Length: 274
Image (cartoon, rainbow, N blue to C red; front, side, top):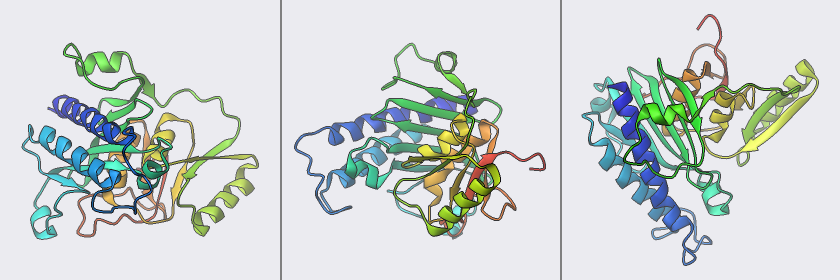
């Protein structure tokens, strides 16, 4: 069942990516509009991607919590042992800047834990996937599923995460759009600890993927995020042997909470005692 759900989520993410690109690459789209204006390219892309994903995920009996959908009261959600958590277009500022660093995020959460995740970068044609018991993978140059594709064939031509790293420095990935004073203080602490520290900036949920991939050792996020911003990346990170911890280091993030706002967190290699 997990493999079937993952394949459906991959198909949904790729189809949503195609819808987003049709708007993103349209020369008639006006990216100077106010963010989230009623008829902005961003809003249209959000909505179309949401519709595609929800239609695809309806093949499963699992309810969907999407940034662009209706957010049901916790009184109803708290009874869900399973749910899809979706961000149809993660990376608002990156979309408007047209730097390509936005993603489609789809996660399957079970009892508060993200057990399956898909993140697709439409402009870069890169797909990250991960699931409990299956591992995490990165697949390049993909825009749509072929009739002959199966999950096994996709994995066969993908790179297993984390990749081997030859970095000599301690690498921190940080938000290009949200670098808080607390994050800057954390970076300075790592410089004191490791000496040579390299900082990589990136947008959207790509930052979590970079830790899962082994490109960076850590991603601190001491600024607001929502559950749909992190659930898919969290699942992929877990499948790659990483974890997304509360900033105080006590425990991993949980999902389908009454308040959908995440606490501050750090993405790093899974600790032995967790």
